[in-house]
Every structure is written in structure tokens, then in C-alpha cells.
Amino acid sequence: MLGGGVLLQRFGDLVKGRRSSERRMEKCFTRPTLKATPGDLSLVIPKRQLDNIIEMIYALDKIAPGTANEDTLLYGVEVKFYNSKVEVDENLETKIKGLYALGDGSGVTHSLSQASASGVYVGRILAEKYQ
Image 1 (tube, helix red, strand yellow):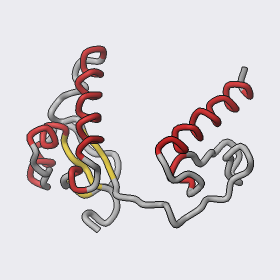
Image 2 (cartoon, one colour; image 1 turned 180 degrees about the vertical axis):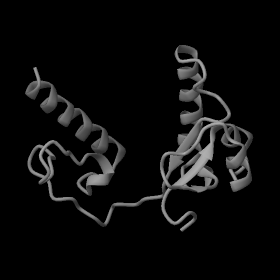
Image 3 (cartoon, rainbow, N blue to C red; image 1 turned 60 degrees about the vertical axis):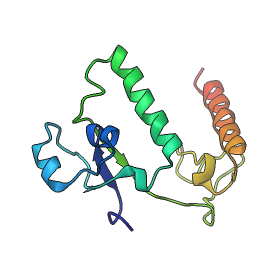
Image 4 (cartoon, rainbow, N blue to C red; image 1 turned 90 degrees about the horizontal axis):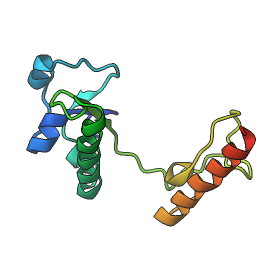
């Protein structure tokens, strides 16, 4: 609705609480590699999650300096998959071998604990498969 698909925001704009505009993107040192509309991720991602993303980027910056640069680009979309259900087998693998549908995106889980458990479950399957 907001960007016709994927939204793009500069990390510096996100931290300052402002949307990224076409003008700001033109001045941006980093060039997008994905077709996206400059905008404000706070309109599509809950505040707590954005706060966690910001905290993670600052933490990554300590081990990979430059990660928290103002021109670091963040992509996001608003997606709800609760009504859709991806066809998966008992291991949550789709018809495309090696492609697993986990969490809320699969339509199989509908809570944070179930989504987390599906990730652990498939992680164990893959660990066993590739030992």
C-alpha cells in the first residue's frame, strides 16, 4: 500500500525518525540493489522490532565498523500471511527441494512460540541432514 511492494530507508533516517525521500536517496553514498520505494519503515514494522534492528546494527558496528553508517540501506515490507498456507511436508519443506517455509510465513504457525519452534525443528533436521 505504501510503496507498491518493498520500502527502502536509510539507517540514518530511521534513527532520526524521518522518512527517506527520493532527494535523500540521490545524496546517499550507497546505491540500492533492489527496486524499492524510499519511505518510512516505522509505518510497516512495529516499534519494538525497529528498536531491536537499530540495536543490532549498532552491535554489528562494533565487530564490523561501518555497519551503522547513515547510508546503510534497510528494506522492509508489510506482509500478512495468516490466511495463506504454503503446502509443506512433515519437515516443513515445500515442493521445491531445499526450500523450507517456517514461522508465520508458512501459514502453519500463528504464534511467536510456534514460529520459533518451527525454526528449531527445521534447524535440527538440517543439522542432521548435513552432518
